[in-house]
Amino acid sequence: MKIFGRCIWFLVLTVVTQVGGIIYLFNIGIHRYVWKPKKSKWLKRQFSFIVMYVSICLMVVPPVARLNDRQPLPWFKVTTLQPQNWFTIVCNRHYVHTALYPLITQVADDFNATSEYNEASLTINYLDANFPFIDGFPLIPHLSHNDGKKLDLAFRYQSISTPLAVNQTKSLLGYGVYVEPASGELNQTTACKKNRWQYDITKYIGFPINDGLIYDEDQTKRLMTLLVAANTEKIFIEPHLKTRMGIQSDKVRFHGCHAVRHDDHIHIQVQ
Ligand SMILES: [Zn+2]
Image (cartoon, rainbow, N blue to C red; front, side):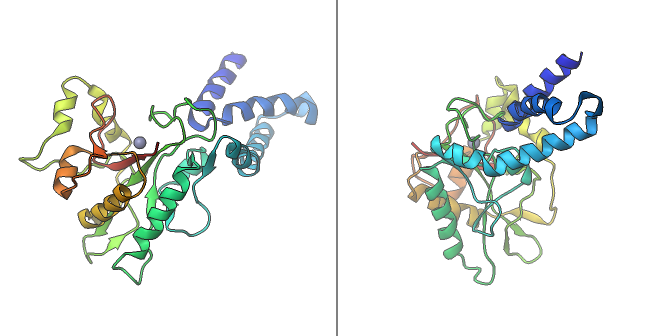
């Protein structure tokens, strides 16, 4: 039973954080040598795991990931690019290929520099990126985020009362709060759900927040324009939003019904 429980923990930590499972096993292994088994209490072991996990993720993973051409996106310093949620950082889901890093940081700088809101810094909020190691290792539930070359970005929002662009979003994780098609617009979700039940599964992780915000089409279009002009290979959003924003580029395309709906975030990828 003890071994079964440890296998479950190893699997969960590996799926969610990639390196957590290995660190978990390593912690169990060395624990016997650091403390005598009699004194090896459960709480002490958990504390030891947390200290080891944080230390390795901060000091070992970034330089080793660099050998795999991946680097962490900015998260600590105040920059024009920031994580939507700390869960992304804690779970090592913020690594990108060294070709994608300069592209997205430049787009973020340009987005802020060309803002009309001189008094406030506008940041781009990033969502799930990739794990630090192993091409082909999927970042569940994103099967394609497996090579460092994919990144999800939050839409832009504005305050209903002002109305001014803000850096917050309407969902805790950045996914699952949709900009629905209006009547007369192509409803890809209805079409996909005829054969693919999972197409809107992200509605279950929506966790809506910030009721006082609404989708900011002007700022989202401005961000999309910068992404199209950059050296991106593909950009995924729902077809009704591409039409609504009047975007002509072939880079911006429908992702297919095998994925999930993209009227809650922007997916970009590089070659
Ligand atoms: Zn994506």
